[in-house]
Image 1: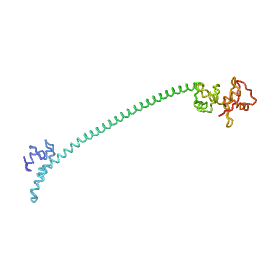
Image 2 (image 1 turned 120 degrees about the vertical axis):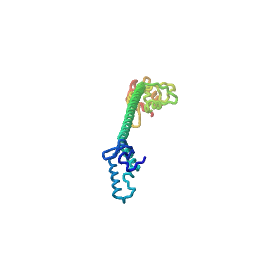
Image 3 (image 1 turned 180 degrees about the horizontal axis):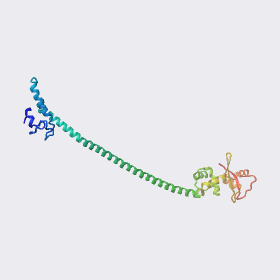
Length: 276
């Protein structure tokens, strides 16, 4: 139903178009839409005064009527209401967003704490594994050392002389130094430096301390020449020793020249020039 500006003064709300609304200076708001109605009577009065005193104004100048009938007031009010709702609900929206952000941060913090806890547990496990490995290695090392000590503590081993063997090679194999071969003659008086029968058994000293003592006592070095401090055995003669050390009895004079004035008595020691 379309209303004119003439009947707006008594029973019509220009905003929600509710009928039966008394628009007067005493009426402050519409009971339906709660719009402020105090300005509309003033607009009606202004429109009438303009029409009565200034007929030269265009007839289209209907300040209250034209603008009240346009959709602008409704659009404006709707916009205001929308903004109000947004402003009113914006706090809630911002609160929800902040709450969600805080919740997300809390969740991330909890996940980081969980990961950190797992990392600490893994480090403890790795440390435990490493300690166990060290303990196992120490135990294996102890077993190996014990076994090695038992081997080293073994006084001697037996060696069967082979056709291709020499006393130099045997000393080098067991003692890592072929120059120690005179010790084999000391430990095995039945050996012949040049004629040892294959299958002859030799006793090889394995204790390093004993080998060092024997070497210091038995082997004498003078310049480039080397001598053996030989212990005379029962039945030894210069000729038998020459045959044993040099392969012929004709070299007996080498003993007499190196041991002038010394008694040739079993149990005593004489100096034997070594052939190599």
